[in-house]
Image 1: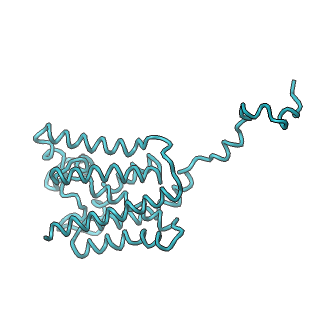
Image 2: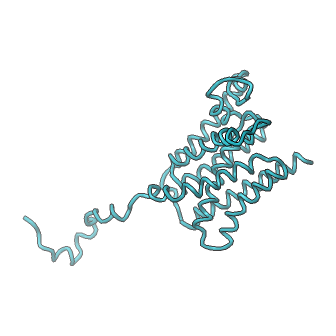
Length: 243
């Protein structure tokens, strides 16, 4: 019963983050101008990790984040290893694909990858900062992409808190860190704690990212010449021609 409650509440936190990202995308009418390459790339690497595990019996031992083993690469490679069985691996990959796609539409491709990487790396450094020696607060149990995905999803809630127009939008955004911290204190659920980290980073990054996330369409439009279909307009016919 305890494991079922843990899984249900963890899934509930993901639903909150998904809804926050969905509100941002739908309200701003951000269309699919191109394939979300960053999201596709992260998902492809996660799938490649699963294939590697299936084809190589020693993959987990060589690439997981077991603190008793050495290897600088483990903090990265363990994100793309899955140890939750078929159901856990499927959940992790599907949620990664969906959340990364939403994040890429709100942020941009490179920043989405940077924030995902922060979700993979920050818990270890936060543990070291606060001297956590009895165990990591990272939800990754030696392996798994869920922690980085929840971190990335929570950054969307941070953006929604700043940009929300309605009270219910801000309440939805604030519900992510509140519910996440409740899960951490009640269940020791690391997904909730990394969601709080991600929410805070989303608030911090939102300002600088706003300056670079959108191209200056207006400036480019001023430089655009007359369209061919305007050639027969009376206004253009009356203009003097330069020799």
